[in-house]
Image 1 (spheres, one colour):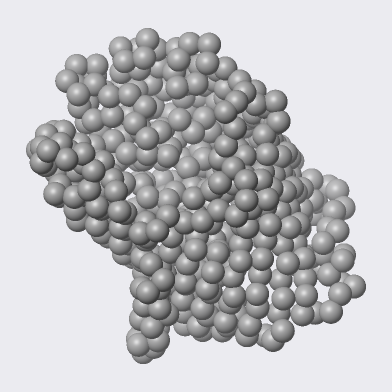
Image 2: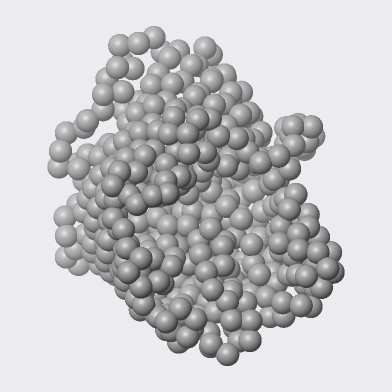
Length: 485
C-alpha cells in the first residue's frame, strides 16, 4: 500500500485547474444523509457528531442550552501556548439484547466505557500534528471479550496535516485519521466501541462551491489490546467530489471508490473457495433542503472481480423529512427507502451481492443494528418531536425484505446471518419498531435512551424458528474538542 499512497497527493496537484474542495474538520461531520450534515431520520446515527457543532445539524435550534458548559480541556487550553492543545471524550453506554442472532435465550446486558484523549501540536498556521489515545472496555459482559467492545489503549489517531482545510484551498493529511465522506459506504462508524480509523493519505481541495477529496486508505483492524494495524493489501482508494448550490440549498456528490482485498470468499464453480478482490464502485448522491423539507437520493453501482467471479451489484437509497416549526413540539415526519442487490444464482460465477464497504451502520436499518445494506429492501417511516429545545423524541417503524430469496440475510458487518439457497423461505424478514430520545444538556454533554424490537417475518420464522429480538440502551456522551469559546 505505502508505495501507492503518493498518488493520493499527486493526482490533485496535477489537476489544479479543476475547481474543487472536500473533506475537512467541518465536513467530516457532514457525512450524514441530510443536507448540511443533518439526519433524514434524526440524531440517533452518531450522537457525538453534533456535540461541539452547529445546532442546525440536528435540531435547527439556536436556543441556549439549559445547563452551563463542562469544558475542562478548553479551559486548560486557554492557559497553554497556542501551539499546543488537548481534547477529551468520554462515553458511557449501558445496553442489552435478547435472542441475539435470533436464537432463543441468547441474552446479555453490559456497560461500555470509552475514553479518548487528543493532543494537537500546531507550530504554524499551515502545519499540525495530532494524536489520540483510545481506551474502550466492556463491564459485566459475558465472555469472550474483544473488539468492537474491547479495544484497550489503542492509537485512534496519529497524523500530520499540511494546510488548513477550513481556510486554505488545499490540504494534505498523512497518517491514522477519520474518513467520513458518506455515511452509507465510507465513514467512521462511531457507535461501535472502537469506532473506525484509517491509515491513509488524504488530499482535500476546495474552491468556492466545488470540492474534491482524493485518498488512499486502509481501515484499521482493531485489537483487543495495544496498537492496532491495518491488514496488508486490504486497501480502498477514492475520489469524492461535490458541487454545492447548483440548485439552491443542495449538494451533488459524485464519487469513485476502488477496493482491493487479498482474500475474499467466491463461488465454488472454479473449484476454489477464495480469491483476490478488485472492485470499483461508482456513485452519486444528491441532497438538499427547501423550507421545512430535506431530501436525499443516492445510487451506487459496483463492478470488477472476486477471483474468477465478476461483480455486478448496485444499491440505492431515497429519503425525505418535513418539519413544521409553527406547531407545538415542531413535529418532523421522515421516510426512507433502501434497496441493495443480492445474488440471484450462487453458482453462475457472478457476484451480485452489494458490498457496503465501510459504512456508519447504526440506525441505518433501525437502532437494533441487526441488518446491513446487502440483499435487502427496507422502508422506514417515523416521527420526531421536540418537546423542549435540545430535546428530541423519535419513533419509527421499519419493514425488511430480501432482495433475492436465494441469497443470505446479512448483518451490519457484512456477515451472513442465515441463508436458504432454495429460496423457499420467502423474502419477508420482519418488522422493527423503535423509540429513542436525545437531550443535549450543554454543548459538550448529551444523554440518550432507546428501545428497539424486531418482529420476525416469514423468512426468519422458517430459518431461525423466529424469536423476536430486543435491544435497549442508555447512553451519556461527553466531548470537549478543546475549541470552546
